Image 1 (tube, rainbow, N blue to C red):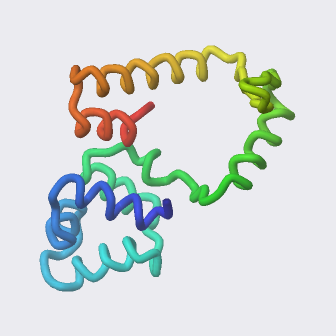
Image 2 (cartoon, rainbow, N blue to C red):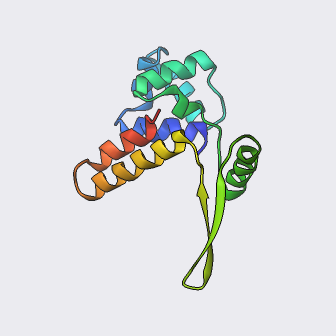
Length: 144
């Protein structure tokens, strides 16, 4: 997702109009504020860091979620893994399942171990009806 797509996604998730977001983020309440939010959502303009922080606050989401760089395909992820390989100590194992090769990554760090444990718990809670889909989405966009 691009930055603009993430802004739109959370705005719509919150049930806000572009005008409402503009007002909450400190833009003028007229058409100019709505146009600015539209430009951000369409990626024709990029908000400055301080404006992105205000938009994040208005949407009730971490600014980190909105500031993540776009990763659009598997190649981006592959390059990230290659970069991590230079700086971390993760392990890749090959397992054969029903005659097919499967590759498993053990990130071998407390951060990822804790992250995956929490993620799997949230997914289980969602499946078991302990949390709503909305609660799960909130967790994904506010994970720290």
